[in-house]
Image (cartoon, rainbow, N blue to C red; front, top):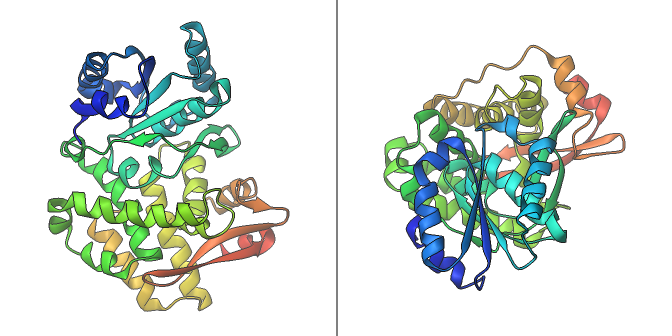
Length: 329
């Protein structure tokens, strides 16, 4: 469905009322007018809230400002939020929707590949705290996800590459056939709709089996535990996709060293990541990475869960004592 049809799409799930479009400056300059005009034509009252781009905006200050903005209008429980943007916008807008008046509808409109295949689907919402990434959040399923692949056609190469990290993740944890398909970047770009559909289908399967991330869904965090720690250690100058790529490579290298997966599995992942021009240089500040891991939301007491690759297309969830993790790094 095209973005210009969003008013028609929302009319099927929300009867009139107000919509707040939350976006960042870069996305708003391209798509805000199209989105607003479609919603207004469908009879909605439309408000806009535009953020500075980048992960640094996904903080408590902006979260509270959004809530105050909604309250000042005022928005009611029958109104909704459109998250028009990438992962940062989707996470922040989703968390605001989850908590404003104990929950109003959120409609996700991903404008990056990463958001299209991952963060817009599944209902995880969050903001970052000074002590860590995504430490305050809620599960709040979107009422609708509007996928318009035309919005991805003009993505800068680095933003496209970020999304490919999540696509590669799905191949590593679940789908050997997808992994093999990704070995031809040109073919992937030419059949992006099919690739997105495959990835969303995989995520849907995990979310339906474990909506609240108590077991099986944790496999979707492959590469993310170490990746999030690297993001924070770099002051979020390292993008999420690049961090996930490094995280997948690092945990797979550890797994190969420990005999949990073969050297061939490591080589296959490394070759594919390099094909998409990911920098796989690992950080030297291991003590800082370990300190951040100690505050990870997946830690339970003195243990932390991590996703370990066993072969391409198959992984396992393992629990480690936090001191053991320090030795593995």
